[in-house]
Image (cartoon, rainbow, N blue to C red):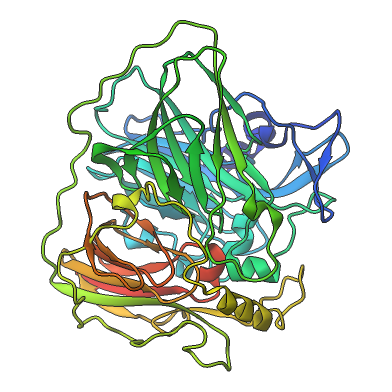
Length: 559
């Protein structure tokens, strides 16, 4: 790297608090202190702010060149207290915006005291640019990521670290950003008001440090008590009555599920992880799991002076251990206020939004099984069923049947689980055994393993092998008592069918491009995908702590 570029890149960190440090607007009047010795919470109700942008240093059209510098930054919490977070360029949830066909040239300058990577979640990249754990960047070192966005890559993606056995801590400290790829020409009407919403959460100690992981964090996936949208607590959005809003969301939380509802309004899903779907899908609510994105339209009420809350409602995902109170509470995200102004006319959508062509019959069928286990205990006791190891040559056993439980990738009107068929006793048993591994609040990890096909992740192991351009069908089985979101690197998939615990296969009503999808307990999904680039690609549970405790594996794709 040339010295002048290093100086220009390093200077980006100095923009931190002027462009992205608004996350914790100081609570100067009456700081709200939560239980358990946690830090004061920032005030609610400030106007929603756009995501802070990463500066493009390129002077050439069609090229985005910059640097991302993860480092420790202090951000004001109150007049007396600062929070210490790890941020890219000092910004909370920074945004990189490009177009299809653009070249991205990003230099990662690691100013942390541990190794890190940049994983481009949802982007079809070369394997060398994926930011996998075996390509980690040591403290003080730098690494260039460079690739071109191909046709069809338009959508809302994101980036976050992915080092081996370090991802959970880095995500908990705030490292994440949004990557928006726009199409050459947008098919949606310009009258829509677009807002990018990055949802994240934090848990801070009373002195502003990020709290260490607890046993419950490792077992369930960490849920911070401070829930943020674009780094703000319950911001507000003031709009004219009747406005059509395009709300584009990223669930950047490590373990928190978002069961989204908007007071007195219907949601309309128009896009998922991989971009626009073919036809709008009306929803009463949307379940957005960790790592997922959703593109929503909302025609706001014509009532002037209205106040409507977008919130995450309770969702039972099979909690193990001591249950925090917030799991049973409605969590406000964003307040939409309608002004005293004229009603905006309805917006007419095109007849077709995007195109999602079926992948066709598979050349390869595989079986993937998620399980959890306590060392020294019978595998069946911990949720194991039959069939571990490499199932690459086995058939899926269902053909092309069944309905995608999450309605093609958006999860739609899924509703609440009611205890997952009475497996709460197993959850309590797992939590009791796991609690022997570490005391609450300690950084050590409990004695519980999350496995794929009976194996914990190892850097040098390959579970499956395949070939470029072959259609593969994966039957993914969640053989456990709790929800797990499945994520794959290097490609997108189509959910073809679903099968609940005791039910028959049901066909999906419509298709979408996905890279992350939820599996309820004992549910099976049939996924079809094609890898276009050779290399070693990860697939894993996107509850970060489960991934780090072993629920991750590698597929090697040959050219």
